[in-house]
Length: 362
Image 1: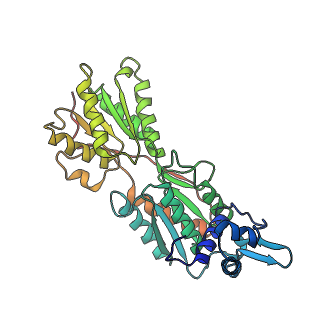
Image 2 (image 1 turned 45 degrees about the horizontal axis):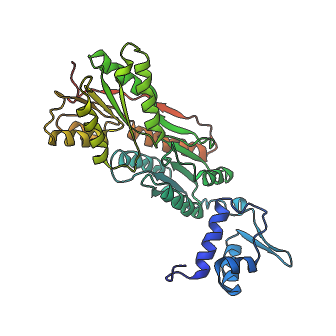
Image 3 (image 1 turned 180 degrees about the vertical axis):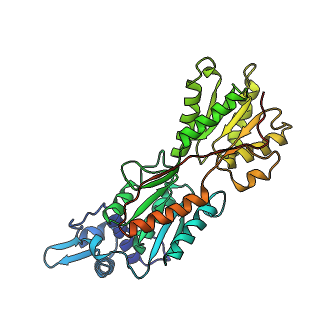
């Protein structure tokens, strides 16, 4: 155990996390003091001090002569209505499209008298879990959550089930987790990518490379839309190329895969690249320009999200729009309606094609 933290606090925290994640369920009998002493290699006094704090916080009750049991903490630990806080968890906070979303949420909820508690997962499931556990203890009035690695991450579904059991209002933004059922605000990733690809077909492009992040549902859906478009044109459907990557992959490695594929093709070299998002597209343009490529003369490049910087780079970036501020406002209004026990419906936004200078007909 860390030397700079009291042993009883570490034990208390671990037991509490097990309660919050439903490893110890309501009504379950806890291990005995002797069991805990053996597990943590500490004295009976240390165990009793840890349990005493959990008793005081309404997570555990002692039954004389019969052991320790998990209380119905869902009921006794309801959110403090006087605090009026809403937890917002996103995969990023200070960059890309996220300031627009977060600022719009904050404006709506603050006008209604609520404060925002912000958490950043950095698209890391472990950070997501740590943030969920921390915020569960704070008992926010409601939750607005962007899932982390939504296409592959299932390790924190137990905590989302706990939020459901608490009967606290919650919504997802950008994507969702299966089986949770919170209302969701998201873009039509599949349909919009299909339309974008068909637009490129209409101006002569046939050999398009799609580069998609596949550990987020958004990336998977965009990749499906790319495939849908090609399936609608079977006479040249074999000319498409797909490169998949994960959020933990280094951009330089992705760029190497792209350029190596291009160099190794003796025929049917790609004439356009659709990127998962503008962040990747902007970085790819910089990388290719450093290697002497001309954009769009040598290859057209398209992004997704209409990031603010996209209109200021050279060439300006053709992209699909993302309803950043609108999504934030709608998420804020939706969560306030849920707090007021009003019915809400999930929202799907339909991105628009923003034509700029990084694409040319062939």
